[in-house]
Image (cartoon, rainbow, N blue to C red; front, side, top):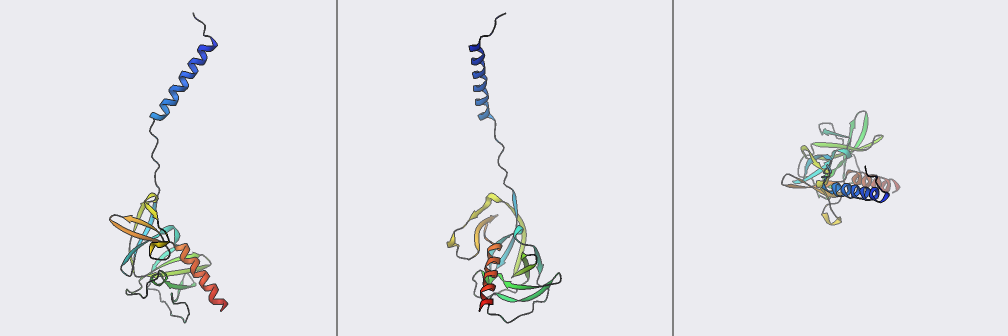
Length: 181
């Protein structure tokens, strides 16, 4: 029986390490699975948009009474009641820079903080859909519509993705500036 020498043990170890190293490239890595993101397909003034479901706290038809109120804020449609709270209702179309609303406001999405909710009104809710987060494409400032910060491809249709947190932040800052006047 032959005894192994320290140099043969080292050579065997090196050979084994090379084999393991080479095999590591032969093993297919699991593809990174893009988590599906739920989206709400909506229409504003005939244009197609999407909202991230995770950015809103609720959805309702505008069957609830919206009471007009005098305001210097042209986007403010009025007030409505939801879950025992008075909630200001803003026109999403006007916030996005459309001059007027051709369609009738039929839907409300609720957002903002729980203690100070805000409702955003729009004309048509088309459907819920999911897209892999890898299918959301960032848009620059030159998107043509304020508060649209991404684009998503739903089938063959491109939809601008409206950033609800950015809209809410604008409404809050606008309200603070109006209170100072």
